[in-house]
Image 1 (spheres, helix red, strand yellow):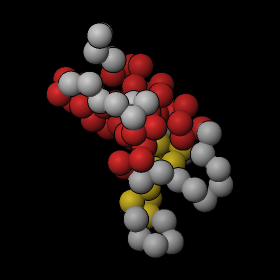
Image 2 (tube, rainbow, N blue to C red; image 1 turned 120 degrees about the vertical axis):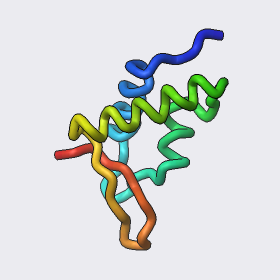
Image 3 (cartoon, rainbow, N blue to C red; image 1 turned 60 degrees about the vertical axis):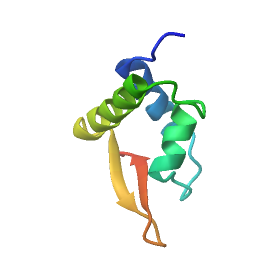
Length: 78
């Protein structure tokens, strides 16, 4: 199996967040599971996921927020 790249993971994160229903934003663990098809296959892939998430946040494509219950969630920047 090939290790999924940072660029591929960035695309998956944006794809997953693009399909989110209104006010049903994923928490960090759920976002990781959905973006990685419920399987991180290696330590290197975990690192790539972490870098991809930081990249989309730094570029302003994704923002970190808190939901009404106080949980950290991610959503696409408008």
